[in-house]
Length: 163
Image (cartoon, rainbow, N blue to C red; front, side, top):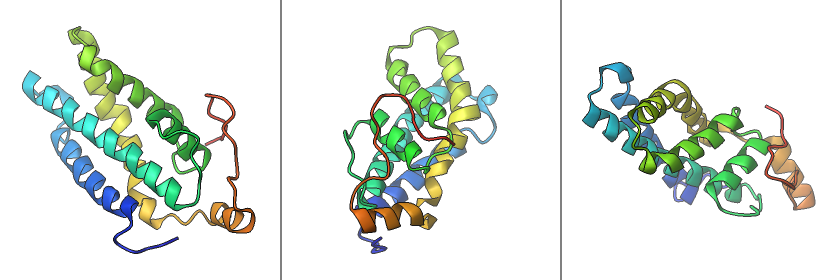
């Protein structure tokens, strides 16, 4: 794999790491101490951090030689999970679902639930993207070099690989 610093996924990874750091700063004292405006800002940080995360994964998978069937957030997450880059695929799918609901959430209880999930469940899952620059995926790389195709096929919307 090309380790040139100009590789797109590495540039996006740096942007993601900055965004993740800002999200972690916002939640460093826990969501309970945040006022409403701070919570709304935290949700906004979560949204753009998640956006950078899935796009970083997409770029990394493509750089690794994986042909993506679709470049949607949900499909990229499924492919990253199947390639064993992500451990908790369901948390990532839930993140996408929450992200899609947040602009339409007018119920304060749902909003508070989302902020709690960002802190308790999604922040740890987002941290899984950080070590991409240290992952080699030797079996994946060897298979691609030998055969030139994906190790797996995603035939349905259900996650196929085990954690």
